[in-house]
Image (cartoon, rainbow, N blue to C red; front, top):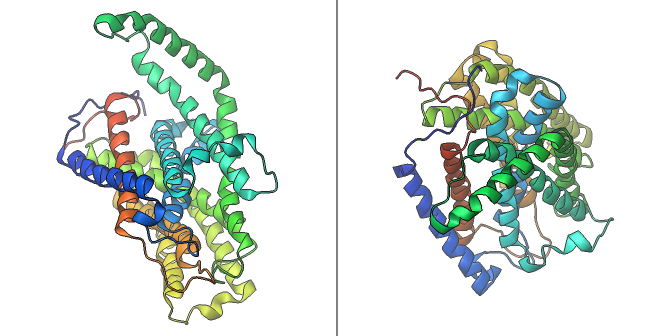
Length: 400
């Protein structure tokens, strides 16, 4: 693209934003109830069933769908494919907000949220969860450091606070200059660190479940679960970028990025195909295909995950005609995003059965409101940022 990123400067308070506010308020009320009345007050979780929607969606799914940040950064900056630069900033913003969403979800889910800082000082190097916690924490800081140049680009030499606050203009401007200069010098380190940390905790989320062979349905429990989590994160990275870019360009009536998205789908075809081969090969080698005709809700969910989240979109992307169609690419990308999200939900919720739990689990209204509220907050902040900061690369409107 031959135009710079710039703020959209569009009308912010639209009907859609007010809808987001409704869900944000509902989520906020539910979070207040959770911290005043306890987890059991707003959720259907128990000692026998210690996790549910908040872990399956807010944490595991959130981490997976934020993979577009590190996969796109690796493609453009490590492998030198600079033609993908226009989608770097939106992917970075999505990853940054996605991981923030994960941390907020964790704060709600863990019983003693005030002790979330303890892994920093009390290391348990034999714990997979320790690795996940440290990697997510460090990577979130890396994402915010990578975002500093975007903020500095908008406000450097432009800080004009009113009244007595004008005394802060010079210090703030100096801070932005220094932060921008430092971030620019070490950006290559941040990008490599981000890719390494992401690969570590994406796979380690799968390792978490290896300790529960008797609690996870055989269709999902496998020794290669860490590898499957990692390859699925790679597989969903670019489709998430396609999904987000298409929604944003359509919502704001901007130029489509098909010249960039079509090559991305070719990469996705290969990575998704690898993930599909691993899933199918593992199923046949372990003989778990015998469960496919059980008719249980776990089996049905696995079939939906495989058919509509992996096989069908892969077949679509094999077609050159689909890859060159904006609608076709968007549908395929949406199905892949759905498939990986469903995989995380299946592993952590649908396929997980506690041997001491006497009843099934379904999220309460409070759990649903917390999750919807966090998602609405993420969308609200995304819209705010792209409206006032130079994130999007296509400020020109397309003809209607």
